[in-house]
Length: 491
Ligand code: BG6
Image 1 (spheres, protein in one colour):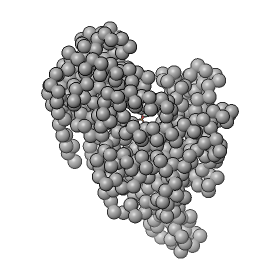
Image 2 (cartoon, rainbow, N blue to C red):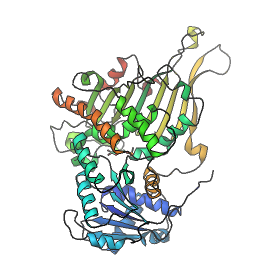
Image 3 (cartoon, protein in one colour):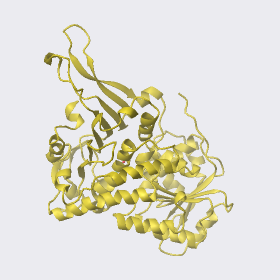
Image 4 (cartoon, protein in one colour):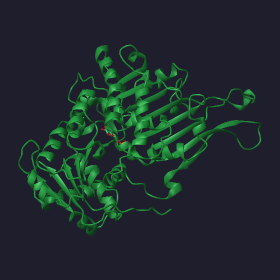
């Protein structure tokens, strides 16, 4: 299968936080890959912005190093050199008025040219940066702003940030990134649901017993402990990535793929989530924190040690039982689970269909397991449909649970672009379908905040789990209480 690259118009992009981790690990490698695939029209300019006193040349060396370390594509020195010709640097302290005009000089003055500002900074800086961009007349008619999650740390702070950005950019030119929406298989969720006649008639509580959404990571918090200590898994992963996945699984068919049609439907799901608060958080949530244990390369320390805070009560693991109060989903729980230092890195949505109403097979045929649809986001992106089939050969009717297995890499023999590659190109094209709208972000916080408050009131620390295990035993018990189990316990 041949990949089809659609060129984007030439653009100017400023990356605030241009020397930071996100820029080095994700943004510049993503831009580089798109450049290698000849997706850019020239002239295109990318301007790194940060406080560090660097000049263009020194910044280009730093970006070349980042590409060598983090870009997946093996590229010739020649290719890196031509990419670097587009890279510029502006030293600027966002808290001061100096330097902003220099930034303006880096851009093309033509008002219709695409100009994008990527704020890869702490969310506290989003409002002040937006304000200064306006004060220094850098916001042209075609300008757009890209902000990273987390947008705030609760509903109130998110509203302040949204107000500040919204005061200078219209909503349709604000691109709130949740990089999970850029993952290939996440978009395949929409293809699977809405481009096939098979699933949609069964996609409701009459036929689906429950849904599991797992985003497991084997890594710990590493060098991000100072951010993570104030965030925890609920804010870092559930408020955005897991809820967005839940929305795509649960939403009604949108009228079209148009940004607002999709976002309207996701918003309705968020508004239908049954609240979890101090009355039910004890039975519907489990928090955990990893202790020293086994990591991929051997023994690893516990979270509290990594965060240099022996008393830390930050959760590195969360399980939630979520219910959606609408006609389609009443009676079908969604079990959400995410954590760090789990046995493997795996992100997966499992849709477990209801059991057959009656078995015609004798007991010796074996247990009839639920039909399960597993949508794997990473690694090994693909879809598996677990069905009961007869074991081949003699020996009577012995049934087996086996997968119809479709691995995207094998099926399409094409390297799917990384999430940031797709999302950055969507910003340049002005396509906001895979970005979060203000009301979505705030609705997600409205549902998350009472969980946080309930935990604060519970006067109970997160439950410990050993690094390298699937979280606290209570997370397994939460599902087992309902007569169910997480999928890796059944397959
Ligand atoms: C980020 C979180 O949004 O997503 C990180 O802040 C997490 O804590 C990361 O590690 C996971 O992303 P991915 O694409 O590696 O699954």
